[in-house]
Image (cartoon, rainbow, N blue to C red; front, side, top):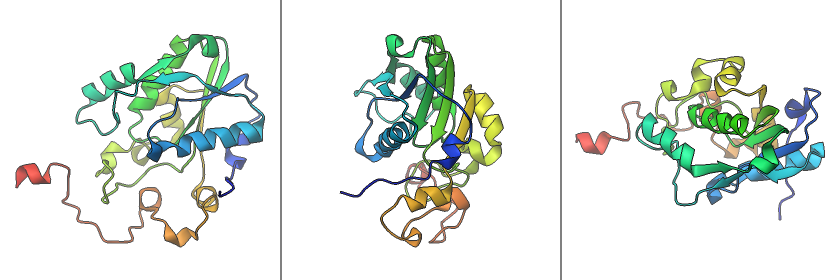
Length: 207
């Protein structure tokens, strides 16, 4: 087993103390690193780890849905808040990433409606500022909220009290392999293989 390590300095630069810290109930295996980050954050900060939302396992990935209307609807039915855990509490959400920001915004709104006193968000990767041409569904910058706006703007759009990201250096230091073994193009815009800029998810439909 690899001992998890992660740079937490950016997460603790604000003197915030919370009654409860939450992460959504576990998603698919490819998104489990958000849960691992939440567990590590809880251990380091000594803030209790709680599951504040229960996931509907019959709803698929929301950010890859074809329209914003469908994404918004599925977010509403995908995660259900546990009000007894959230009401009157100061909450830290640990997320794996923010893509468009609309899903995070809807989830945060749900937390406020459930009676949260404060809502803070910490992201276990750097801001996604560049499109991915290697299989992840955000092929243009306009779909990435961090590519067009400052962290402060994203914070206000999502509706949280504070928002902080893990640095690229801290993220790579937590890996068991050298940093050169990983693609970081969506963070820094340096593509290991020159992408075909005309590719899109509808290319086969047009051919």
